[in-house]
Length: 388
Ligand code: FAS
Ligand code: PHB
Image 1 (tube, rainbow, N blue to C red):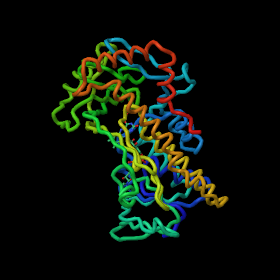
Image 2: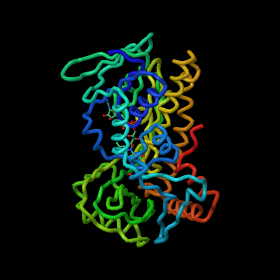
Image 3: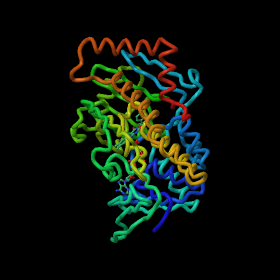
Image 4: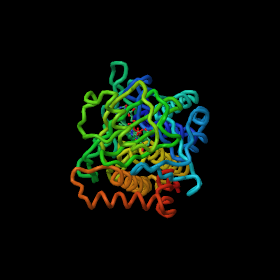
């Protein structure tokens, strides 16, 4: 097989990249190790920044999003039984949309295939060769055979556990990392959401997040130990703990729990995000705690920059934007890392915290609740910094 851009991974990054390249007349093939059914049911992120919503609509994948996505003007911070509204629409003129990542993936796959795009499912990339040469080859397993995809450029959109980042020789990458001493126990519950907007709850028992997917489907998270076993959390215990951490700031309805899992918390960024003909995008290059709802949105931003750079390369023979790809992405990546860290240290309990730390957190929340400047800063980061 031969194409101009070989894309490893059919997550938000790989699918959006293939669509953006197609619009520029650049050919690509997406290799996805999992089945279509698997990637279309995987529960992950749930929130789109304003510009990401606009991009999905502009690319032609916005019909169901506009019909089923839940548009929110802001979020609420719960602390000491009080709810503080951070109104994005009033503060920065932007909104956010709740629309499950698996629905985004479904829409992107359908659109790409409808437009004649090439996605090979159950096709696991096993090796990337020629990254430093005049062209590259992706070896992959498909239908019980080992096959090869020759391409000018490889886009590593294969997530944090893919093969692209490890294909970069030792000594090339600098890895910036910090762990967090907790995880999130997340559930999907057949119950009406506790509020019409997301609630981030600060409580002495630990952080809780009240999100949703539909008027009858809640997405709820509890701060827990990083190695917590979900089996130790029967449904009744989860709802009791959520109610305790919501602190009476609104009513929480129980429901049948459809999904229960623990997500560990880490911040990781690798620099540079490129090596020869390989360009990393999305989780293959960076991950962050979901407290800032940045993961899927950052993946889209990376591939917007990469598609623009590749268009300049193929249309005008320019390599300047490709050479600057990593720097362009990292400017935004690090601002998202900062914000994800800010929201995480603001709202969680830390095993090594002091009484001073707790009072400082309370002062931070009071400042956000009472200051237009502070809440505007949160609003512009949460709803999405401009791409330019
Ligand atoms: P993805 O991981 O989505 O996609 C990579 C794709 O590559 C996968 O489909 C994988 O099967 C495929 N792949 C891997 N290796 C391959 C190989 N060798 N060959 C072929 N294909 C290969 N973000 C938020 O903002 N909010 C959240 O609440 C949130 N919750 C999360 C919960 C979990 C459990 C996880 C793991 C992540 C969560 N995230 C969240 C982050 C998540 O949304 C990511 O940021 C987003 O999926 C990034 O998209 P991609 O970079 O496309 O990577
Ligand atoms: C979600 O709805 O899954 C969600 C929303 C906001 C976050 C994290 C997760 O910060």
